[in-house]
Image 1 (spheres, rainbow, N blue to C red):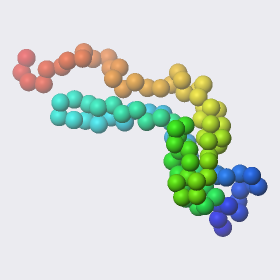
Image 2: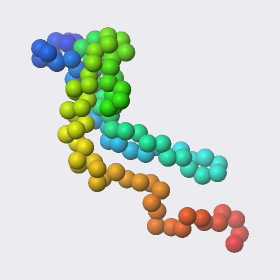
Image 3: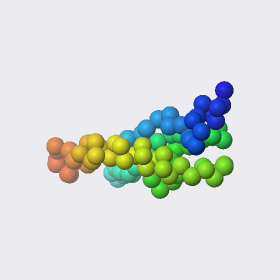
Length: 103
């Protein structure tokens, strides 16, 4: 059974997963890099392709279906809830500089 047969008429995609906004931490030799990953949703398009969409990336690359309305609806519903929950990994209860060799 394809996604297209499961969707109601007028619907262009089915949301299968929501991914919370977060920072990805990459440990480097001289420190850490924090990369912001905006909230996104995983949808299965009518054409059958699985897409990870954000507010700025919302078109299917295969069939050019515009999923902007679906993305906005899914993300706006959770926006107020997340505004106070966003975690800033650089806020630690320890000093900024900690010697790594003998002090």
